[in-house]
Length: 314
Ligand code: HEM
Image (cartoon, protein in one colour):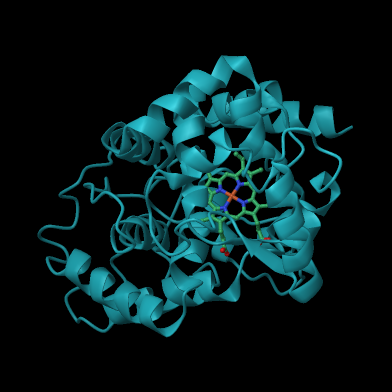
């Protein structure tokens, strides 16, 4: 059943990608004359959100992934439908933190506060910019963000199909190739787990049973989860965006099964070792993969809109 759902979503994404309109209009200077201060406004708003909460940055980055992976990068993840049938109420999206949504809404309010920009910048583009800010303001790479996405009008629970923590390498690759992303892209993007935290329910079953988990790490996690409900995805440098995630994997200290499998499986281990030894290469490939992720299923004026309130279609 899960297999069928994966395939149907894979095919839907392929159809989206083949659409002649998809991604055609994205460019870095899209708002140069429409809203010249856009990037500075989003930068300072995200900075404020990140100062208010350590969860804001990681949650905004994850939100961008969950938006793009479902119906494309069209801010459909932000929609709140009055009949309760929307993406964020799918169980797979229930662990998205409110701080991520708040970061986007605050940035949108800041953008719309500039009379020149009001109602001219899509929520989808603000999500893409906020994700870049979350990365760069945590010490990660700064990269140019392609812009010009329109917002979607549709969000339903049933359209949500996302990778799970018990996926093996083939399942991870199948999912990401459905988005037009390679195994190398997938491994680089998984490096996003250098930020943020995961609820103990996502990895508890591995403790003491998964031979790929370092035994000292297992002991540590047992005591962490006895005290609190979550653990840091990269405990070595929790708030910093760096390549220590990959070094953790080398030592059997990957938190999620889908993290550790990238090292356990011989077919992806070489790339993990490469990123662990070369942070510049990781940063470059992460940036490229984020740009590719940002092109998935992009809407145009023909099938989208500039949403005034990110939570409701106009
Ligand atoms: C490869 C497949 C992936 C799986 C199975 C996966 C799964 C998860 C899970 C289970 C959590 C913990 C959620 C919670 O307990 O709050 C999480 C957190 C996170 N994920 Fe992923 N993820 C994947 C890929 C990605 C990608 C591609 C990105 C972005 C580039 C990303 C960014 C994040 C971030 C930043 C967090 C921390 C969020 C927070 O602290 O609120 N993940 N992921």
